[in-house]
Image 1 (cartoon, rainbow, N blue to C red):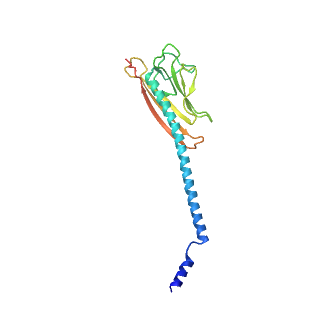
Image 2 (image 1 turned 30 degrees about the horizontal axis):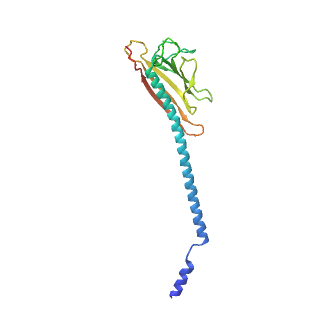
Image 3 (image 1 turned 90 degrees about the vertical axis):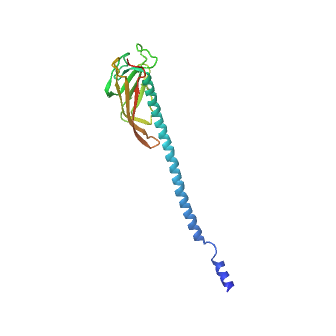
Length: 201
């Protein structure tokens, strides 16, 4: 009796070749799916970091604009097409796409005014923000190519000297960040406010 039982167990021990092949195939499928998910997560993380870098560029640009406007004075929300008129002031209750102002330590009698302007999208060209530091003579782009500004307005009040209203600028920016190689886009709608530091008495 003992010998028969021993033989029966000895004859049925281990795995067959079919069982091993099925096990290896299932393991391979699980590994391929897991590796694909891991690669997708890594790719999504890289794209999210690229988008964050683009948004950081936009935030830095707006912070720089607000700081310069806050320390400036003589705001002109309706600069001339051919350049900035020194000493001119103008409110924009309904908003405008460009603004000029005298920078801190500047001279209102000379052509050293700073200016910002929104260039609207044109065909394949994305909209962007540009800056001038010589009264609108030369301009340079300040937003990254991965940022497309769709709409931008400057609202200005209190520019008339002695009107008891402290000059204030509200900036409204709408656009899309991302795209290109990252294929991830994010729309944004940002508002920023700058109040002139110099008392308007």
